[in-house]
Structures are given as structure tokens and as C-alpha cells.
Length: 216
Image (tube, rainbow, N blue to C red; front, side):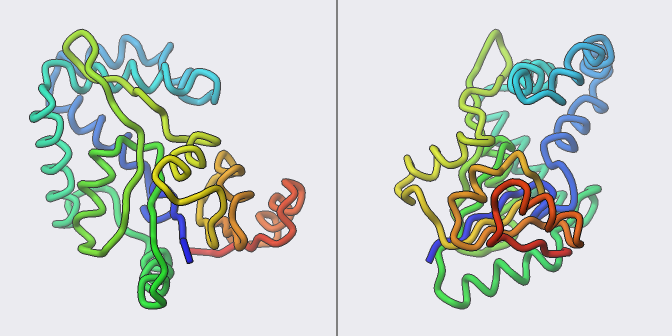
């Protein structure tokens, strides 16, 4: 069986990309000033699905300007190493790791599919030392920095799973966001990581009567 997990807000208790970008910006005054200058434009763009990729790319470019591919990979690895030491405002959710380990013990394949940059997600998942496949947003160089190429969110997550050889259906899907409705609809047993009756009602209204809400 195949179990598919989202990363940010599901396995992690926060947004890994936001923390990584912020830490790169705050260590460089020019990056911080540039971010403040574009924030009134970029932040609202990130909040809207139709412009999220463009808004994220603006912030990503500012944070990565001047980085080669080797430098980009190094930055992600260093972020993962410091995260593993417990010095980041991020942590694994205990309930999420318990569910992930249950699937691995049962012999299930586990794939983490996320809108976070693939290089960043891979660096974070490497600290778990578990046999987990990672699919994320690909990046491409542009004018000396990096921007989003294929943004792995919403329906694109399902397409990425298909292209990676995992088919169009999976046994389990875990996420904290209804932006992942296509992912949940592709699962025999969809789970939204928000407990309570309100979450269950939202799932029912979304046409997922077989879904359940889990409080992690």
C-alpha cells in the first residue's frame, strides 16, 4: 500500500520554506531590505492560489540571489543539520511520526509530497533516517537567483505522484490543508490533520464522507 504525506503543517508543525527564507534574509541586510520593499506586493500574492507561485518566486529569488546550484544545495543541507539539532522554530509532529512509522512497519511505501522546494524537503527528511521518498517543488535559475519551476501544490501533487510511478490512486493521504483536496480525493483513506467536528464537517462538505480528522 502507498501512504502519502504532506510536509508543512502535517509532518512539521510549521512552514519550512518560510523559516528557511526568513533565516537567509535576516542574515543579509540587503536581502532583508529588498524583502521589506516587495512584501506589500509579494505577500498578498502568496496568499492567493492563482498568484502563489509568482509571489513565492519573488521572495525565493531575493533569498537565493547569488547562489549557485551547489550553494543552494549546501544552504538546504545546513538548514536541515541545524533543524536536527533542535535550534529551528520547527519540529516534527509526534503523531505524524507515529503514523509514518506505523506505515513503514506494516511494509507500506511512504511518499512525502510537498509544495516546499524539493532540495529543502529532502534535507529535512534526511534527518529522520527513514526510507521515505520525497517529491517537492522544483526550482530553476533565473537572473542569478532561483525561482519556482513546477510548483508542487493542489492538482500538481497528484500529477507528480503519477509521473513518479505511483499511479492515480493511493491507500492513504495525510494533509493539514484543503488545498490538497485532489490529493485527499485520490486516497482510499484520506486524513486531514485537524481534529474535531468542524474539520469532519468540512471534509463531508468537500465530498469526502470516508475521510477522518486526526488531531496531531
